[in-house]
Every structure is written in C-alpha cells, then in structure tokens.
Image (cartoon, one colour):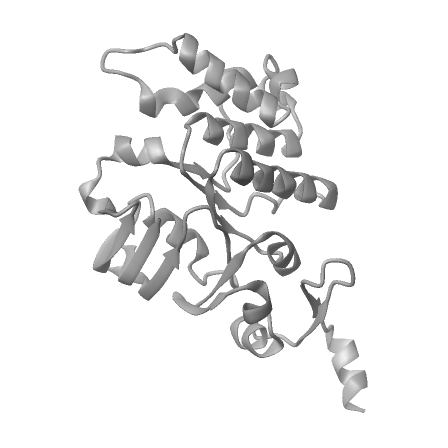
Length: 265
C-alpha cells in the first residue's frame, strides 16, 4: 500500500527526515516509535504532503502522492492529530466534517448518505450518545473517540494517528487502541500510528518502525525491534527488555539512576 524509497524531506530548507526506506502492506497495524524529535510526526505529515520533499518518492496505492490532488488524498487518508479541537461545535457536527472531502461541487451541506455514514461512525466509536454535546463539554477520552469517529467518517483506506493516547489514563489508552484494532479489522484499514509508550506499541502493533535522528534505525516485528541494544542506542537510557507473561510480547522496563548505582556496587 505504501512504498517509501530514499525519501528526504523537511520544512523550508531544514532537513528533518533523511533517506527513508519503508514498505507498509495493506491491512497492517504499524507503530512508529522513537525519542522526541526523531521524526515520527514528520513521517506522518509526509504521507499527506505537508512537508517539503527534497529527494525520493512516496507511493500510495501504486501512485506517487505528488501526482494526487489533496482532495483525493483526503478521501483515502484520514489523520487523527495530536491537536485537540477547540471549535464551538457539537460532536455530531464535528464528526460530520469528515464528509467534506466527498462533497460534490457546489455542495454545502451533508446529504442523507453523509448523515448515515457519520452516525454509523459515531455508533461504532460509542460517541452517538454525545452527538448533541459540545466538544468543550466532554472528557479527553471522549474527545479522542470523536476524533477517531470524524476520521472514520472520511471512509479512508489508511488511518494515520499521531500519539492518540498521550493525554489519556491507562483505561482510556487501552480502550482507544482496542477500538483502533477493531476498526482495522471491521473496515479493512491500514493503520500507521505514532506512539510514545513502547509497551503499548509492542502489544498492539504488527510491526514497529524505530526512528532515531530523522532516520529509520530498525523496522520489524516487536520481537525484532524491541531489544535492549537498539532501544538504549536510540533513547540514550538503560532499559531491561522482558516478556509480558500473558501475551509473550516484549516488555520494556526503565532503570532509574538510583537502581543503576546500586547495580554497579
């Protein structure tokens, strides 16, 4: 579905990502991990042509994205960003914005089909009960569900999510990622998600892409990527990698400074 070859990009004259090679297959759930400033968000933005390309190509569904119109990309790719909406709008109105890329010429309001798709998306994400509530009145976890419902209303084939769990407690983190996994299965979506939590990435993602200083350091299954050597090199901190006793997935444990001092004695 996505083929990135020798891709270098940035903002203005500043290079952020260098020499990226990455293939993502249809139907995969792929996590992007790496320290702050490693290029996770920029990689997502590159897929929607929001950065300047210096070299290389990104092909989406067999086509160079530079040859695709922005409206066409918006009909195929939905984005759930880090920025929470601050507009004065009900959840139902906000979710309906996902239909805008599908509006015909001179169409200014949603038709019956648009309303049906938006309500189906809200039902799937359990936000239909919030339909008439204002965005400013609901919790952070509920806002995240509304963001996903709006993205689903676009009827995309590719869903991009930029740290959707970063402001949530563990109950809502698990709830959001369980939902995304169900969406992938039910709607046959390909998912590319940037995550800070390595253990959540390990549990939910089919494959991981470890970014470091604007480059892909390693890509593969959680078992291949989450080893202590690569994690310590990328994050510049000491870790211990074990296995979750229930799922057998890699589990990354941090080592505080005081513990490191005790271990040296």
